[in-house]
Image (cartoon, rainbow, N blue to C red; front, side, top):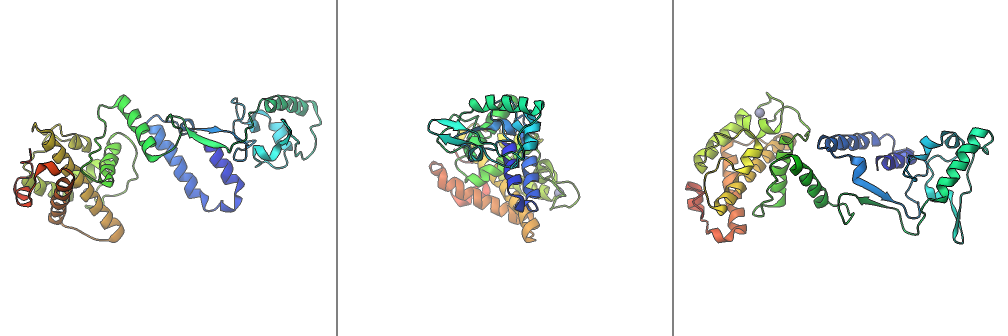
Length: 321
Ligand SMILES: [Zn+2]
């Protein structure tokens, strides 16, 4: 797949200047995937049809390597090195012919040996009538989607880690993602980092941003007074979201506390973005207000059976049964 991207970039020489950033992002992505033992090159498989989207020289047509490496002498003779497979063959009835675009014809023995071997490979090339397609190898449908990638990540993590992220349907997907992202950082997936926008004293990582920062600590102090929950044993964001410290028994209570935890992370994350991108500063008190209001609204609307009312939510939120 990466070779294909590389081929596309080389073909479109006019984008060369702007593509440095894109290429860097792709390489960063492969590093991040590598961090969880996923090889980006194994995630997608090319299914060649007519060969219009398949590079003749830079993609593996035979399953034994790319032709540029196998036949370096022929590659040197090729006049159009960025060609696709479909640029090189012609259909004559049911047969496929390969009229080469040489700079000059193969003339010495080594070049002729490469030519004969290459002909053998091309005789077995599967040229179809469909468009070329990329398929996601880890999903039986073969279709790439955000949810198929998410499932793949979750499955990979679950092989080595005890927790699966709890996708809580009482809160919107963006808040679920915020919690999920915070957990990913805990699980060793590198996240872009810089100095903390709240205190400016420490490098920002998930532990500092959500739990250890002095400024955020003021939010948690207010939060604990409101919720009457103790967070004494919590060492990281993952433990925060998995409620090991909560001794209550009711599943609905646990689900409501989980909502509040995720909303809290979300509100802290939003305040951080507001500082960085909008230069807008909040107070710990205003963050707690937002946490109380947002979590009340979502639990009220989505967990309808709980019969919440705002007054009791403000005084003792987890009296839900
Ligand atoms: Zn800080």
